[in-house]
Length: 247
Ligand code: G
Ligand code: G
Ligand code: MN
Ligand code: NA
Image 1 (tube, protein in one colour):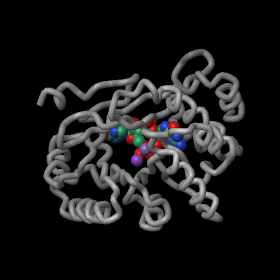
Image 2 (cartoon, helix red, strand yellow):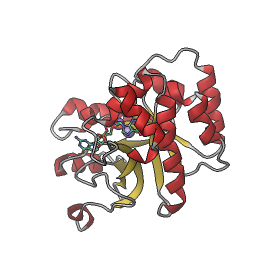
Image 3 (cartoon, protein in one colour):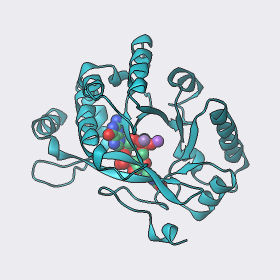
Image 4 (tube, rainbow, N blue to C red):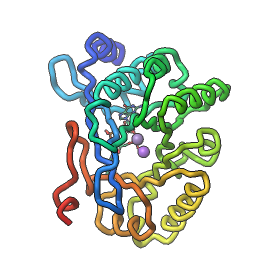
């Protein structure tokens, strides 16, 4: 089942299409960047009924995860020159796949990776960390930035912050949802903000869906936000939701 689906995408990479969700400079109310999100189609042109995370998990399970993420990376690198000025572009990559040749090579082949941001979440144990740290340093030297995705979730904890030394910390949606009126979530966000300041990392609140949540992050002076209230994933380069833009 998955073997046939994946084979179709590797034969025709246009079955994997990227959409782009705005990331907002909360204090200025402008777009600071975009997150790329993969969308899959079947060979007959219909949207896949499987979610992207299932696609990436299935590819990983058959040893082709790096190859699939490489399709994303190639498409992201191709649109990079068309990105609006002063914006960054993020891609989601699994740290345990990043060091594989299929994924590392297209990135290392580029002289200047700025303003590309690699969003890392690890759902598996990474064995020997040294190759990853070495690669991270080479990618940084080429101008790539690192983000820790899903920060505060079980998958992206304190250990990963010390290992990856991210320049961007993406607060997990679970911390964002209902943050207004939840003292414990507010305290955690404040703590991570302080922590981010100490290690020179920016905080990004993802999954903002309500005005109450947005106001909480404005009050906390969290610099960056993302979520359906602000902008949905769409074609390049979708603008902010009108209600937010005209506010
Ligand atoms: O956009 P959406 O909510 O459908 O994404 C669902 C999940 O799939 C999210 O966890 C997201 O991080 C993951 N995902 C989407 N695009 C990519 C991608 O390009 N690479 C990887 N590894 N995961 C992705
Ligand atoms: O795992 P990762 O954090 O990369 O997943 C990002 C996913 O979150 C994407 O699939 C995207 O579609 C989804 N997303 C983005 N904004 C919102 C939001 O405001 N609410 C919800 N429920 N999902 C969101
Ligand atoms: Mn992400
Ligand atoms: Na995330």
